[in-house]
Image 1: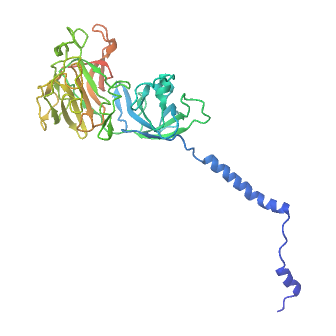
Image 2: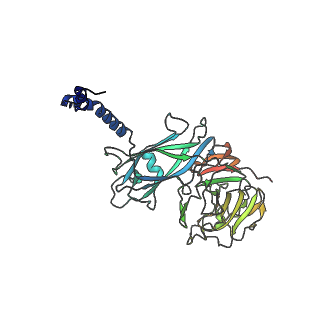
Image 3: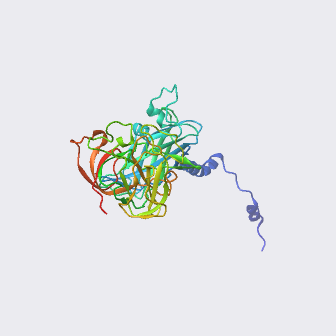
Length: 410
């Protein structure tokens, strides 16, 4: 069948070009879609945030102080930016809740909780306040925040924590148009059991010197050994015996036997195996500190393994008084040695700590509790005839608090 010529021409005739108005109308809808998509991408783009590394070196193990559960841990912050960063605010939330923080640290609280690694003093000529200087992290520098969160008695221990940190590129902590924020730094809560111990002495009244608190020397001690850092003294206590005069000494301070605790029997706080013994280091003259090395820092000491990954260290023991040897099995209440004044110490006391490894220094400090003791109040306020008398159970003693142990029983 032959197709008419008119029909053929209609098939091959080029299409009519659209006018400018028609062309603009055809493109209008796709352009609107592209603009909306671009706006959405910009809105959803994640801010880069502060150029920092944050590390929690050891997850917190909840421990009771009196009736409160306390979370104790450190946040190490390294500044990878080319300008100083000032930490302005820190909030801590639980992942189980969305209603407000369980802890909030403002500028003053942060200044009290932070230290600069390798620098404990303000630079000369720096006119900023100590609070401002403490919160500034210089380029390439590291600061440590010592966290201490006391949970309310009605709150259950969370499974994890998330942290919101607001920084400023201004050294004084303000003035920058946009403050970089680290929104969701996670820290898990350890579920390790807390060991219950027996008293290390045959009763008596004792000061828990430099004990568990967020501002003590033990709490702030970080030791770098063989390329790694450790906080073995996180919950350590320096036990000083309080005598009938309400003091740790009598008749002066020039002799070791001026200390009430000198020669006090030191007891095993639980059943276990002796894993390290060092003896033969002379006791110091009171108030005279000898040259301290990694080998003599703990003085004469004993380490007792009481559970898997749980070791009790007894340091500064009296020279020649240690009664046990490596691999000996002991029971709670067994005498290990006598309280002395050897190693890094200027007065007779017992340094006691619990760690996760068989080492005085190269280990992480873990919490512990005593089954019971009587709390007599802060050491700074203690008077023989005027003090509180409160029974505490399943608790760790508070730092620089005075406690009384009942006579130990086998």
